Each structure stands twice: as structure tokens, then as C-alpha cells.
Image (cartoon, rainbow, N blue to C red; front, top):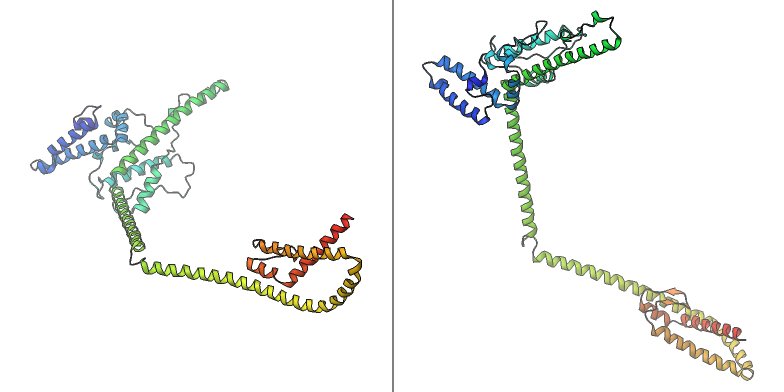
Length: 401
């Protein structure tokens, strides 16, 4: 088995550009279509060139290869594998299989057998051998991705070995039982570090192999291509939907700004509606004023009727009082005349202030000036004003005396 760097003819510290130039040059040289006289050798060399470039062009695979290059080239002869552990480094190359069919040397047959061996090795150290759990199989070229391929890679990508790696212990605790307990604990701690390191190395090797196989699995490539097609279709659908949405918005904007859709006829209708609303508001205001005037007229009629009833009774009394007081109380007659004059003056004061909508004599609030003016002209209001003025004068005379 040749080193990948030797196959491409580049040094170990070659850059990506150097790898690409060397790969293109060798691919043109050993392409089977240009070597019809020696097609078998050209095909074999061309496969080695492709495999080397696939590994070295991937940064992660190249780092793994550089770290384990000696073990891969030597076939893991220098590694400390115990208990007949399968050699994984022999399978980090495309030279271990031939084609992607279902024969014994195909991609599916070789790696299916390899992972079966790894699973069998772990089952020897399993503490739950009676469990019904079955390790996923690698499958073949016709295996379904959802049922077989996905399950296989999901399990093996998180692989953890069950091997105890107790053969890596530096100290044999059984032969050192007479040693102090503190010394035994330190020895056990050192042995545990060596075991954990062995398990970690094994896990990393198996997981790296799984990534190597998955990258070259035609079933995974087909599924990735299918996902890319679906993604492209979804992107196209989203783009078409956005275009339809923008077209609808453009049409709506044109309809709202078009003179035929929102022209002078509709503006005139709008103005007509506004005028109707104003007319309705004005009619409602006039109706409220008429209602208030009607209330005032009803009050005046009531006042007239009441005054007619009380007038006959008051005339006799006032005549008797006036005859008896004409000679004895001339001052009071003058004061009453002055009070009457003051009442009329006060009435004029109320009339002069049309903005005052409150009547203190009747203790009423009015909505409009017209209703207040009509109320001021009523006889009931004038009687109450005179009565209020008379009461105020009497109170002043009491306070002055």
C-alpha cells in the first residue's frame, strides 16, 4: 500500500493548490480513455489517484491520515491490539474494495463484514448478552435509507466500545495486595487512565472509519442529492409565492390609485354623504331647540292658568291692604314702587346677558339661548323673580332694623 502523498507526488506539507495541480496532471495522464492499450493498469492507478486526493483534499481526513499514517501503511503492525481485535487501518482506503455491487469484494460486502466483526468483538464483553437489542446492519446496495442506512450511521457515529482494555494495565493489583491502601489507589488510578486512553483511541478509530465509509457510500450520496433537489424545489416555490404576493400588492396599489376606480364620481358621492350627515346634525339641533321652546310655552300656559286662579283671590286682599295702608304707610308704597322698578331692571339685566343659560329664580338650566329668552318672557318666571326680589328686600330690612 502506497502513501497518499507518494501517489500524488507531493511532500507532506503540500498546500491545497499543489494537491489540486498534481491531481489534475496525474488524472489526465492515467485516465482510462487515454490509455486504451493498458486499460487495466490505467484504471487501477486512476483509482489510487482518486482515493488519495479524496483523503488529502478533506481537512479532517487529512489530519486523521497524518496522525495515523505510519499505522495505516504498516497495516497496524506496530499497534498494540490484543484479544484478536480487527485491524481497522486496512480499511481506510478504497483499495480494500472493488466496485459497488453485491459481490464479495464490493463496497457493501467488505464493510458489512467488517462492522459485523467489530460488533461481535464487543458482544463478548457485554454484561447484558440476553438483551433483545440488535446492532444495526450495514445493508446492501438496495437497502432503504430511512429504515437501514440512517439507523446504521446513527448508531455507529456514536460508537463506544465495550472492551475493558485491562491488558493495558501497568500494575497488577492482585499481586500487590500487601502494599498500603494509598499505594493501591494510586496504582488503580494509573491503570484507569491507561484503560480510558485505550477505549478513547478505539472509539476515535471506529468513528473515523464510519465517517470515511459514509462519505463514499452511494446511498448517502443519493439521499443528499434528493435533499438538495427538494431544497431547490422549495426555494423555487417560495420564490414563485413571493412573486405572486408582490404582483397582488402591485395590482391592489394600481386599483387604489387608478382614476377610474377612485375618480371624481366617487368623490362627489363622498361629498354628498358628508352634506347629508351635516343636514341630519342640524335638524337634530333644531328639534332640540323646538322641544325646549315647547316646554317653555307649556310652562307659560300653566302660569296663565295659575295666575287667573290666584288673581281673583289676591285682588280682594291687595285692595283691602292698599286702602288701609295708603294713609298710614306712604313710605312702603314708595319702596314697593322702587322694588317693582328694580325687578324690571333686573329682568333687563337677565335679558342683556343671553349667554347665561342658568335661571337662579327658577333654578333651571337651558340648552340654548332661545329657550332661555323664551323662559325669561314667561309670566311664571317674572312672578318668581318678583317674589325673590321681595324676599331679599324683607331680609335686608330685618338686618337693617
